[in-house]
Structure formats: C-alpha cells, structure tokens
Image (cartoon, rainbow, N blue to C red; front, top):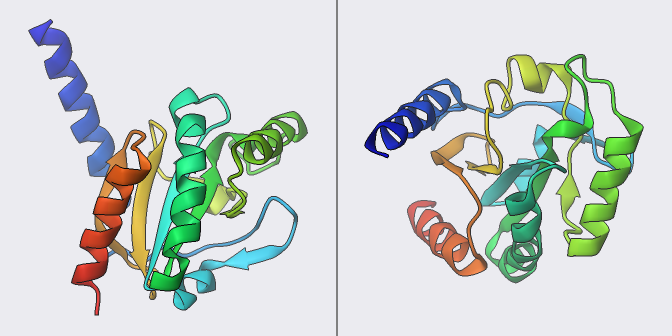
Length: 174
C-alpha cells in the first residue's frame, strides 16, 4: 500500500510540474459550446475567474457541476465567474467530436451548469492552459489580467470547500 501511495504522490507531483503555473497568463481564442467566439478577454470583467477543466467521462467532474453552477450564481456580485472547459470534446487536432459534444451539452443541461463552457483548441492543448493535463477535474483561478493565481487544484470539491478557496483568493486580490 505504501508503494502505491508513493507512486500516486510522484505522479501527482509530475502532473502539477508540467501544468499551468501561478503567474502565467492564460491566453486563447476559441468558441463556447453554442458557437459564439470567446477569448481571454472574458477575464477582464472579473476579479477572479475559476476555470474548471472537466471530462464527459468523469463522474467526479459531473457530480461537482451543480455546485459550480451555484458558486457562479452566488459569487457573481463579488466579481467571480466560473468557466468550464470540457477537455474531451475535441481530438488531438482540435476537431470537435459531435457525439461527445452532445454528451457534454446533455451533462450541462442535467446539472444546471449554465456558465460558459469553452471548446478546447489545438493551441490550448499543445502550448496553452491544457498542456499536459493528465487528470480531471482540474481547476485554476485567474485574475482580471488572465494570470493564474495560486496553484492548480486536482479533484472535485464541494461548494463549501470551493467557497473557502474563493474567499481566500478574493482577500488576496486588490
């Protein structure tokens, strides 16, 4: 058991070492799931944007989506917005898989996760925010300039636990 935990810890450390880092700017041009163009300029309207990277195949991702929807609603007046990125709706070349996108749309409807969901692009996957993402859900927070604040969070959390993190990050923002 100790050997398995050591391997798990080393794997997590490796994943985090290749991921987006605090202070790095998140840049992208893409579309949302409805086909509207969306860019990193969406960060400017918020003190903090919570970027949740999820997969249609991921039960913990889906389970936390109603909580993320509620967080988005209750924190809007504080300048906080939730944005989702369903990582598995495109292939390695950035082409949308219609069946997986339909699954994503259905999950969003069932969970009430009506916040913005961004279609990943090839650039996001090769050199951007999604490079070397090995596990989902993965969540980062960015400031109004699109710079990552704090660490990447792996795994799902409850609304209460996310709220504590959001409140802590808001206190650190100007």
